[in-house]
Image (tube, rainbow, N blue to C red; front, side, top):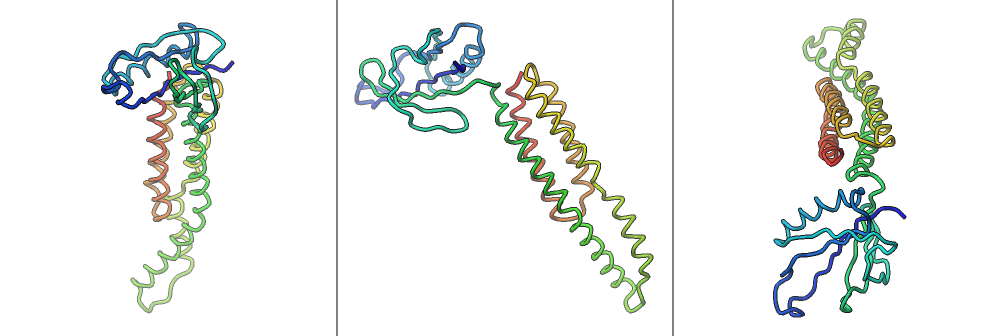
Length: 245
């Protein structure tokens, strides 16, 4: 059975109790033994829940076959990228909602994988825009020379030379190749598992360095905007890395 942390979400009407909820410590039941990944994740979650609710949240470990002892699952309410929500009958006949969060991989790893795909897509888009950016750069140079030289004839050989020099200074081929390599490395580290927080933090730094260089070289509006979008994705990736060991 896959490991789960079951977070009980039960909001009862204040009139049912005649006072505000919650009024006593809340128990988070984890149906697995102490020391497992479910136990390790549940405790900081309980601590944060306690801060939000203003009440102590106690983690109770109940190893067994049933996800939540004493609660009968009635039907699936919804499923998303962060788990499932089930309707259930609880003790005392109360109808509650149970959310099951899969822990098949560390918290943050799934988000990192999704962001990696987004960043790789952005890099592919940048690479596709490079030829058009080079053509716009060449046309801008011609316009500048026409303005400077007025009616004098343009030296086509000189223009070609200037375009080549400009292209060399703004070439981002190596940066794109290193970005792809770093993203492949990131995927491999996530697949391998184990303590990956520190190595991934280093990789995010390297990715940031390449994107910064790419942005500095970009003298085209579309490429600059794409570089900014990539930096935003990297910031989100950095935040997710903080969730990993």
